[in-house]
Length: 65
Image (cartoon, rainbow, N blue to C red; front, side, top):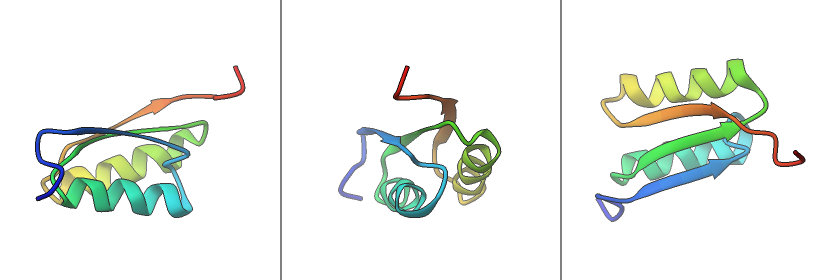
């Protein structure tokens, strides 16, 4: 648990590499904030992490704004 006590903000975390990083960071003990414009996908990744007993939330974030 190398990331215990840390918070990770993953932009683009709803799919692909970002989603995998969110899962990995959560498994390593971080509390994960998944930020993306893809609400349904981001909420699903956060729910999967939560179901595994780890901490994650999703927030809508458009980095172009």
